[in-house]
Amino acid sequence: MLETSKDVLWLALAAVILWVGFFAGLSGFYLAMMLRDMTKVTSSLRRKMDTVDKILEAIKDKMETASNYLPIVIEGATRAVEYFKNKKEKRKKK
Image 1 (spheres, rainbow, N blue to C red):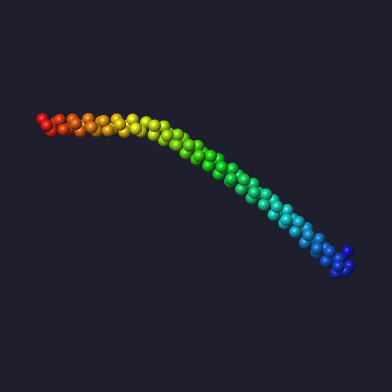
Image 2: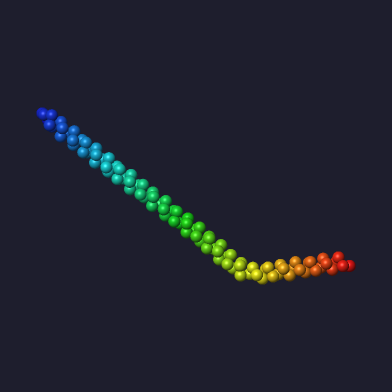
């Protein structure tokens, strides 16, 4: 079976090629698993960013609605302050 040193060389080369192939396949598998995990992370991040975007959009809409009523509220507060100020002045005069 192993008659010359060339036979030993061919046997060693075959073993090395077998191990290189095995580790190349294993590396490919781990690379695929890392890419799959990265895909999961990016999709999760995308969902979270969409949720944050929806929340910010809702806050923006509420702020726009509230800003429409702000002049009315300010006018009412101004009148209330004037009313109480006048009432206090009338008490001082008496």
